[in-house]
Amino acid sequence: MLWSLVSIVLTLLALKLFMRVLNKIKISDYKGRYVLVTGCDSGFGYLLTKRLDLLGFNVFAGCLTKAGVENIRSECSEKVTAVQLDVSNDDNINAVAGLVKKKLKPDQGLWAVVNNAGIIGSVGPTSWQTREDYEKTMSVNLYGVIMVTKTFMPLVQKGKGRIINTASVLGRIAFVSASYCISKYGVEAFSDVLRQEMYGSDVSVHIIEPGFYRTALLDRELFERKVETKITNLPKDIKETLPVNLVTLMGDGFERLVKKVASSNVHEVVDAYINAITSRFPRKRYLIGFDANYIFRPLSILPEFISDWVLKKIT
Image (cartoon, rainbow, N blue to C red):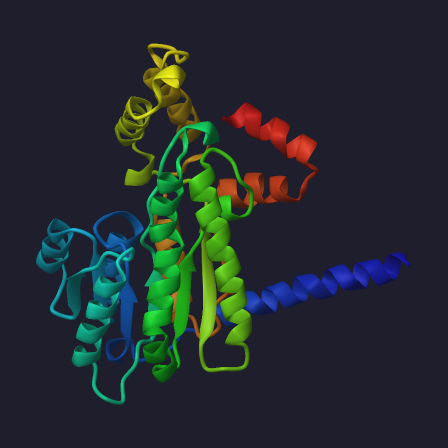
C-alpha cells in the first residue's frame, strides 16, 4: 500500500516536471504573429504591450481612453496599433474588429486575444450595492471578456491561436467585493466551458489568475473616492447610521489588506501573459503570486469555518 502511494506521488512529480519542460519550449516567428490586448491604458495591459513590442509581435492595443491611445503610440514602435476600445460597448468592439480585419492579410488571423481589461467595480458591503453596480462591473469584467472573445474568435480560429482570459484568485475564493468576485467567477466558468468546446481544435484557452498586485486598482485614494461616492448615494436612513469617519476607516482597512498581501512584483503577471502567448505548450491555468499560491488557493479548499476565520483576520 505504501509503495503504491509512493509510486503515485513520484509519477505525479515526474509528470509535473515534464510539463514544466514542455512549457519552456517557445514558438517561432514572433514578428509574423498578431496579438490583441485589451485594457492597455495602464497596469498589466500597458506593460504587456511594451514587452510584446520589444519581442517583435504585431500588437493591437485596446485602450479605454484617448490619453491611453496616445501614450501607447508615443512609447511603442509602429508594430503596435493603439485603438480606443470600450469592452462594455458591443458597437465599439465590432468597429475595432473591422479595423483589425483591414490590417490583416486575407489569409492571416490572430495568434492571441488577451482579455486583460477590468475594473474593481463598486465598493462596500452587499447591502449598499444596486443592480446598476453589479451590471457595471459585469459589463467590463465578464461580458467584455465574452463579447470580445465571441467577436474575434473567427480570427483566432484562422490563426490557430489562443484565447487568454484574466480571472483572479478571487474567482477561486470570494471576499471583499461581491460584484468583482462574481465577475471573476464568471470568467472562470466561461473560460472552462470555452476550453472544453475548443478541445481537439486548433484553438486553446488559458486563464490568468493573479493574486493581489500593487496596480492602479489598489490605490487607496481611488478606493476612498469610490467609498465616498457610494455613501453619498445611499438612502438617508442608511447614511444616518454610519460613522462620520467611515471613509477613513474603510481606507485604513483597505490599506492594511494591501500591505499584508499585495505584491509590487507586477512583472510576474506580465511574465505569465508572455508565457501563455509564446510557449508552444502553455498551461491551461496560471495562478500567480505568493498570496495566490500559498494563502488563497489552500484557503479555497479548506472547510469554510477555517477559511472564513482566516479571511476575517486578513481583512
